[in-house]
Amino acid sequence: MDVATAPNMATISREALQSLLDVLAEDHDVIGPTVRDGAIVYDRITAVTDLPAGWADFQAPGRYRLERRDDDALFGFTVGPQAWKRFLHRPVETLWTMRKSDNGATIEGDTSAAVKFAFIGVRACELRAIAIQDRVFAQGPYPDTAYALRRQNAFIVAVNCGQAGETCFCVSMQAGPKAESGFDLALTELIDGDGHRFLIEVGSEAGARILARIPHRSATDQEIAKAAAVIAGTESQMGRHLQTDGIKELLLGNLDHPRWDDVAERCLTCGNCTMVCPTCFCTTVEDHSDLNGLSAQRLRKWDSCFTMDFSFIHGGSVRQSPRSRYRQWMTHKLATWIDQFGTSGCVGCGRCITWCPVGIDITVEAAAIRANPRPRAGQRHGHT
Ligand code: SF4
Ligand code: SF4
Image 1: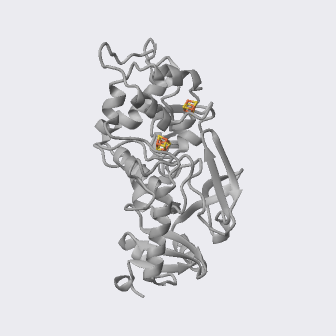
Image 2: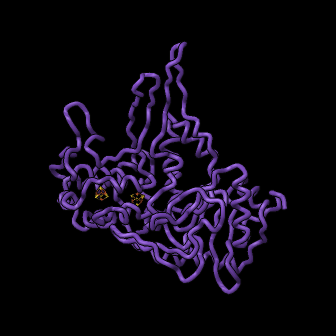
Image 3: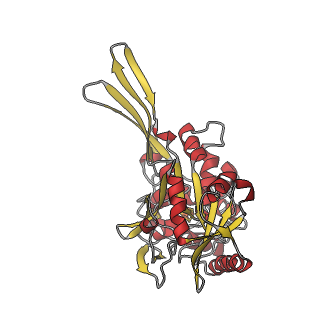
């Protein structure tokens, strides 16, 4: 079947999923969910058997564990600790390497940007997070060329969630659970008396070209209805809710609210929430040189607004207290991000709740301020 006649909605078998991986592997690094160290982690995959068949994840504030499902679902979990940003906006990026030579010095840029990724199993909230990072890295006045190239080369196979986690609130952030845009192909896993199969939706011409190369048939009306019911079921099971109306004004109008002191008593300022967050993008730059003076490198590394160094300028750190650092993170995510980039910086994936060692929950913190807002009078944006 050629691209022009490929259906927009098709059905593929579990076996045909292997064909999809094989076709993509011809010119992509195929990355998908795997089980490692008791968690779902994104890694290189070559076969359907690399996927986490029969695994679900239990998540709660500060808690995560894998559990067996009573079926063989390949995508029967929500999101793990890693976000796709580790491949697009990498934890450590070599900006350049300088080598001393007889003629002076040569400077090389990083060549790893040329890699072509195919991401398998990207959730709706993660698609939204990628779109947010596109805004930051690729659509501003100074695009990050390595990010933009990796992003342009990436092929995305999304998966609509078949269940919500305890810490998920994508519905509140209008970021899921259905993949609406930003994918090449989107799967909905169906397991019933008619077998284990996937409804597959085409989201781009590249997706149509790939679909045309793998065994598929047109989806039946029943399969389309069943997939819609799966997504509706997920939507009704959201573990959490965040009331977003007027949230920017609410938070910025309560910068001296006592709840910031309350959360500061619990926050370890470990930065886990920023590391797992799929939209956090802050970095620091380090220069390294070797001991014989023949080469030097400039590296860009993920950083966190929870560290003292992050806001260090002459005379010390601007944000010295845990209170100011937590407030900076949360008000950026939910309020000032809107001024900066036109959207919320949160997609409701729940990672910051699950992976916070003391179980601090951004939805609970926002609700506590909303429940008892303080007047603006006398407010200042303190540095303490
Ligand atoms: S909110 Fe939790 S994860 Fe974030 S810095 Fe504080 S203790 Fe660490
Ligand atoms: S702030 Fe928390 S829930 Fe929101 S996108 Fe980041 S990790 Fe996910």
